[in-house]
Image (cartoon, rainbow, N blue to C red):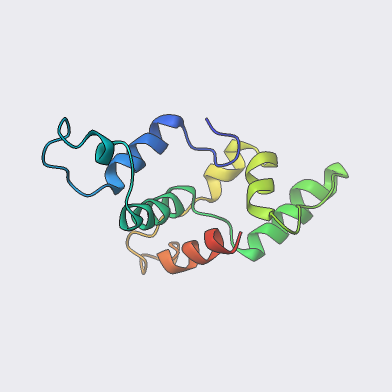
Length: 123
């Protein structure tokens, strides 16, 4: 498991493969099989944002106040709060708060993909 995202290497590789457009002959186009186009990369960023489901600014603040402050630890790094959050938050804490984008209107518990992309791209 990667300590910066909480995702396994297997999940990252699977996301890489899912993000690529279909390749007709993988042996003939070996370079294309091992690399990404810009469109593939955009797809991968969206898929990773969905997988990691980055915290909102309010959730960062909650983490600072309710997890770090009681332990007298420094607050999250203001320049890179997302990376710092994934390094310092316990995996159980992260997984309990992850919400995917499917069924956005389902009981108001899901976050739209655009919110997740904004959080990822801002960091």
